[in-house]
Image 1 (cartoon, rainbow, N blue to C red):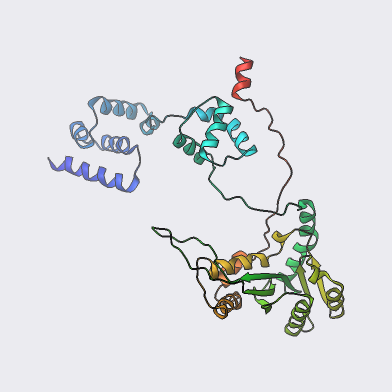
Image 2 (cartoon, rainbow, N blue to C red; image 1 turned 90 degrees about the vertical axis):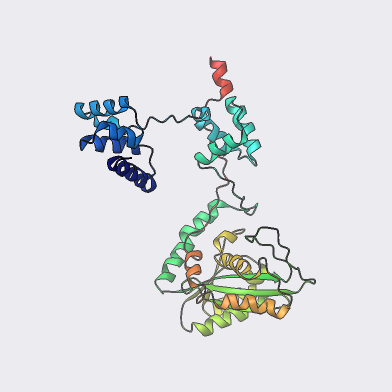
Length: 357
């Protein structure tokens, strides 16, 4: 092998490693022709035929250089792509639980029977992927939530960001000591001990939207209006003379006459969420975070350690977990649309096409 041929192969290998493109030979062949490299050396170095060399020379001389870089590699097109809109409309109307179910829907719509790998590739190509369904309250009123968010909650958040008010999201969580199932990266399934008994740790919390700091009242018995009054007292002591506003749900121990009158007499405003709106209470995200951070896939046999782990996580929200809280506790909310989707327009199925034919 002479030096020129060896040099060409070195360049080809290097460019393939860096670029990884299908047109590498066409590009190099054109460059070498432009620089007057002998045709036999190009053929030997790139492994192209004499006819290819002559074709590229002709294209260069005629000025049709764009054709040098056409990728004519055969790319088979799935027949399902011809029915893409119909298939997506059917799957959006009735999402499939499994690939087998998706295959049945596609066959019903198009008449095409395809293997499961083909179905999977088609779905992935068009943006579908397996996702766990989310749950929402059956009695939710989406319109009321949107109106509340626009007219009440967003303005409060805007004022809290400016420091004009101290805005808190209030809720209680009842942590029962036991097994909390979580996921672990492992080669085999791992079993975690589950404690016996029903020890329960109740936490009534108020999450400061601006600082991400949590103020809590805890016990091992029950959360009642008495604990809500204690929480209000703590907030008043921590922010004397400031405008304190509490966003909370409609639990009876929070919306009772005693709590409402006490709040008014101490200059604290209670802002009650629309019924069945846990998605608008940002503190709900904290409870999930605590479970994932401290409890999931973990065995805590001692109740004191169980409580300490929860308290430690809550106390560190604005310190150790501040970066996470900044992305978790924002002014963005999950809203739900329970309205039925409009009927697809101008959509024809395989069966209707056959009838029309």
